[in-house]
Length: 446
Ligand SMILES: [Zn+2]
Image (cartoon, rainbow, N blue to C red; front, side, top):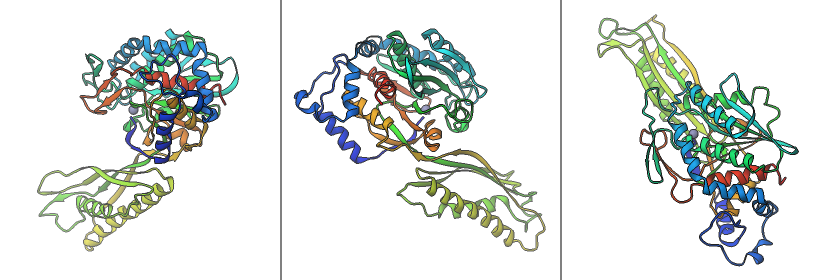
């Protein structure tokens, strides 16, 4: 999921709202309750991207697809629930991947395959030369094996672990793909439809990493992940460095062996230093010791003190800076605990395992992919804020490839919790409509 999403770009927010109020680029098929007046007067103010998307939305094949996404909304919700009921714990997403591949095959997606990492990859070839765009969702969940994933439905609300994150994204990808194929929507280039492995914490973006180091790495021009609910555009990638840090010694009796370095005490010294690290607020930098463990009994010197540490920032330089200071603190704690017992010859070791590295970066607000995403939202009269988060898009963003993570519409609650819910309300269909317009916009209007 897009964890710790933070809205930003007040300027964009205001301009998006302004456009929402003043532009009337609505298509006849979206079914707005209210059409703003004065379209002829204000249309001239539209940026080229908005004007192009407005024209695009009115093309017969696209208008038909947009209408079908609304009238066949139940299909999308049925798929969302069906995918959710196939368990997909970290590193055990293969069963869901196989079903996702079969669903894409049934829609007519070509060249379907599962790559060595487990990603499902299919293609829709455009009618002329052009860029390669990825449209993806992630297959994994955070929930362990044995979690009850049965979907409970009450009206428009679906409740089950993973129903929003990322079953909504996968269903939106299917619904959009289905209409592009069924309506033979013309576009240039190539659309790669992908279900990725390992987006969540333990997976450490392993699917998308493999994608950008495998045979497709040099041919992907643009990348979209559908992850999250609502209408956010994530174009800022929060980077994170995660470590499991272990202080190790032989351990012994708390009374009889007293006078030797104590791994838990060394860890305590390290935690005190970490807690006092300076961290800037702009760019935002965070640190956290999230888990600690170790120990044998109250009257034993532990053989181990273990802690899991998470560092984050939207700035790659700031992340590298706090990481360097963390490394110093960990070594100082080791030296200080050894120095505390100068007569002891008992060893004390520090082991640092890297458990996650997610690169930081930003796809510019002024980039074609962000402008198209914003303009498509305006065309549909929905408000789409720009946000910063940690998602599959981190990897292409860090490589300088135009990439965003878009939300899939609807209203989500309780992601990563057992009572996670997704409410489609009256206009969940606008999520897939928005995605379709962005995808086709990116493959036709440049
Ligand atoms: Zn997700």
